Amino acid sequence: MFKRENAVQGARWIAICFAVLFAAACAQTKPDGLAGNVKPGTGQDFVVNVGDRVFFEEDQSVINAQAQATLANQAKWLGRYSQYTITVEGHADERGTRQYNIALGARRAQAARDYLVSQGVNASRIKTISYGKERPVAVCNDNSCWSQNRRAVTVLNNATN
Amino acid sequence: MRGILKKLSVLADRKSVGLAVLMALATVIVPRPASALVEIDITQGNIEPLPIALPSFSADGGDSKLAADMTSVIAADLKRSGLFNPLDPASFIQKNMSVNSTPRFGDWRQISAQALVTGTVIKQADGRLRAEFRLWDVFAQEQMLGQQFYTTPENWRRLAHIISDAIYERLTGEKGYFDTRIVFVDETGPKDKRIKRLAIMDQDGANVRYLTRGDDLVLTPRFSPTSQEVTYMSYGGADPSVYLLNIETGQREIVGNFPGMTFAPRFSPDGQSVVMSLQQGGNANIFKMDLRSRQTTRLTNSAAIDTSPSFSPDARQIVFESDRGGSQQLYVMNAGGGEATRISFGPGRYSTPVWSPRGDLIAFTKQHQGRFMIGVMRPDGKGERILTEGYHNEGPAWSPNGRVLVFFRDTPGANGGPQVWTVDLTGYNEQRVETPAFASDPSWSPLID
Image (cartoon, rainbow over all chains, first blue to last red; front, side, top):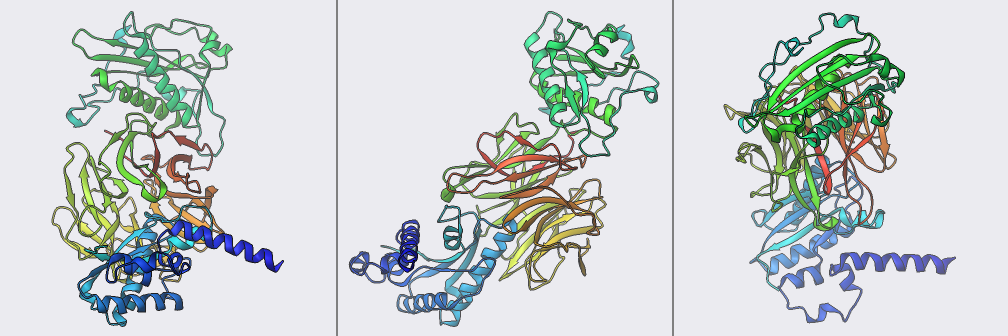
């Protein structure tokens, strides 16, 4: 019984990694993967070694402990590489109505932005935008996908690889 | 016999007069309409559709395909309404009907037709189409309606819809909704890289035309009740914003100069203002902009998401959705803003309210236990009825006569996507509107007149 649960969880983890592709969570599970070849201070460095996104519970915009850790790392990285301005993109899953989800995505982007500011990122470097439910990254039909779509993504403006 | 059609109506050229226009509507020719036996009581749900015979219009030696096509469009309109049952032409006993002779009513009674439509459509020497039709009460053996129209040949489908509206109105006592169009968002490409274009079609899905190219994400188009304009949200500018688009000229402009994202627009009943949400940090508030004076007015001021405003048809009130009480619910306030009264109290979340053009109902989307429903309630929140329910139904919009709701229904998974459906106010007669690709956010035009 215990073994089977592990197998199921493992399968789901692979599914998430597959869908997120190069997102931080996947790369970090492979210690000698992409991370070793990434040039510090690049967009790829930010995505792979810091993590560009945080996730939210259904119909929530609370920055949970895991998201706090990710955003704190983002703030630290942005402190080191001060040439970047950023856009925080807020997103919602497909299990809501369109107009509300636009506002919910904006609320999530704002929550992530406020946390970055609290960690020392100058507010003038941050722009926010909401895509509501219009730009999912995962397209399967259960919560393992919807939970990946409920996100705020920090995008570096004028990033190079 | 032709003299019986005393008043003529003229359908103006659509191109030369914009989207005008029936210049003068023909009048009912039989002087005693009250004596008619055949009428539909549409106050009840799930009524028995009225058997109606529509023999192919005659072409008098001209374009018989056009005449048959026009008849088919009329029959399809009436059938889709759910209120009529067009009879199988194979069962017709009297053949080769002329619009100018009295039908053999016994032949039509025998196949249980209660109403009969005869007509003709002829291309004249000047290139215009001339169409005539008569609506007959088979049991009273009387003509109920007779009209004649002139138009240009490319308007033949519109002409068919106008005839459908005349038949519908004469037999139900309500305005029709067939000579109308639906603006919507066409969706192509994979689910995680959707291309969205504004598009417009006739209410039966014909004559699809694209209004934007797909370069920018576009959402929630809404028809002006008074002009050939659409207001919608676009991601084309620095901030996602509400725009106006003239669908005849293609002219486009941003609505207002707001400091941040604007979304969820809708016109006021007089077409002179747009209400919408402005995102301010984590909150969304509702603003009104007068399109002539360019003056903006704040209507809500809450630490919440206030969105999807919709005016009552008398323009005195606005219904909107807000999560100010903790979850999405419907509220009504005066059109000038101020205190709002919550009207939705059932289990679940309520959103996308839209006030009926008749004023008596508010349609909405409701989410409960993972299901998405379309429903209606009275403006005081009483009398809630769910019209359709399933995995994902969203975004109702009213037909201009307040009889039918159009909405979109999404399907799950990577290959899923939205389609446009209609449902009768009573919850019966669900019909899909065929579109070239996935389609969402439908909004009905007013009657074109």
